[in-house]
Image (cartoon, rainbow, N blue to C red):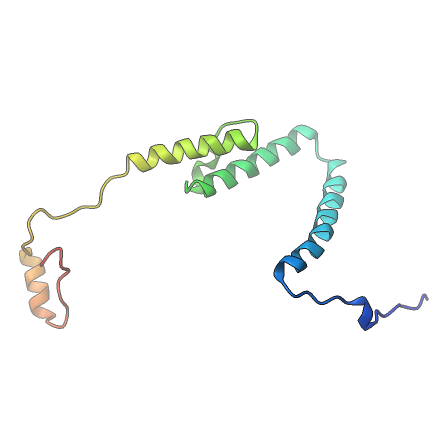
Length: 130
């Protein structure tokens, strides 16, 4: 049974900032991702891998553009940039055609509202309806 080597205090580095920590950890993360990618690359067909990547790009682009996740599969493009442009275009279109919030034309309270506020004197009507 091999003896386990216990690291000494000199082997540990303290980080003063988050940026230092991120810079030290990023190579480890990249190596782990590369190892997993290589592991799965052997049994995932290249076309399926490409489709999975495009699906991730679509979801990311939709969420970054403020679109619902349900619209992610509607985005088109063969590259991340093309998908992002399509998401921005679709988001711009939907923002132009949003229905404005309802505003009452008359500042008077309806009969139901008057009755409600009479029964609840501790509540005050909103200023737009007062």
